[in-house]
Length: 215
Image (tube, rainbow, N blue to C red):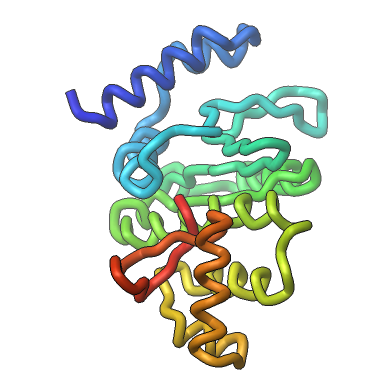
């Protein structure tokens, strides 16, 4: 059994065991859909390495006091992230006006309720997996930055913004150009942010060459 299978089974068993809501427990016991499983196995787990703060089939109320379910909710502390897998088959290609309006309404509901929405297209997962993994790490990085907002200086906040925009490891020279400071000062900022776990070293041992958002 692979490391993914072991951790996934333990995670789902814990989710089902601890769930008090019979509606959500029933959905969990039925198993996750193909798109969600593909996302977890091929994208999330290779990029993140765990399922911390992740909750499948998370229940939310809709505008009509009914219930809807987020494919995967990412809830570190009080922050709320909603990951939605967007399929693309005959159903999606032939999406009628009613279902299209309902999809937009669903996204509005999540946004108004304070969720940071991350829609992932199924074709992108298959055709551009590496790009999707970078997006996932940037998504997680948003919550890391939010949790430390009160402690961030202007320079640190700008560094986090650069990391989100690039969606890839970046060098001290790139940061220096972005901040319009010296290479030496940029390296000092990066070392400080690494010590605070706001950034992580992506490559280089004796001297860090590239930095990224932490997993």
